Picture 1 (cartoon, rainbow over the protein chains, first blue to last red):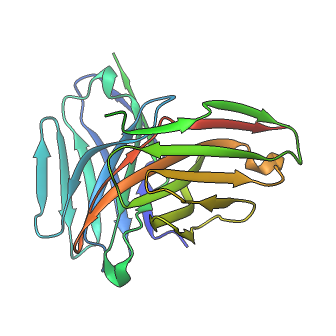
Picture 2 (tube, each protein chain N blue to C red):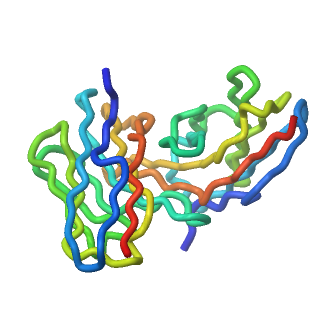
Amino acid sequence: QQQVKQSPQSLIVQKGGISIINCAYENTAFDYFPWYQQFPGKGPALLIAIRPDVSEKKEGRFTISFNKSAKQFSLHIMDSQPGDSATYFCAATTASGGSYIPTFGRGTSLIVHP
Amino acid sequence: NAGVTQTPKFRVLKTGQSMTLLCAQDMNHEYMYWYRQDPGMGLRLIHYSVGEGTTAKGEVPDGYNVSRLKKQNFLLGLESAAPSQTSVYFCASSHIAGQVSYEQYFGPGTRLTVT
């Protein structure tokens, strides 16, 4: 059972375009929603994260939109650049029960064409 | 700070051989994790540890064992390697404070091939 569903699996965008990756979750106890960026041959690294008390968080060209009632959150990359080409993972974590184990989506491979 | 380091970076094993992957972190993090990454499957949790001397099973623990004798180290063992364990293995660590969890810091990965 997949608790965090991520889509699309792959995404191709032209330079300057907007990249949008979506995630949906089921467990309403999740309270921390990070996005990780992974370049080929490297480990994932935190890109941006949000907690459910806000509906949007922006850091530079990267924005998380969070819809608590729909149990969905998405990553928007504005003015996408070839250097943004990477795999992106959404995740969700809850402190419920004393466990802080993240549940990851399956990842989205983003290619930004010059 | 080196962050999270993993040893070795690459390894080729024959079926039935054993090996240990070493993860070390210098951030004094309580939690440590071992994941495997396979194409289209994302990151799947193998085992994790919430502190020195404690370990717990994750989503895909079969065929693996772990130990955390020191807070900074987390070892992943394969007792009898199988081709299905061919994967890229990532170690991660994170800091927990009260009821708040923070980001995971990942190592650079170990690419393991079992023939």
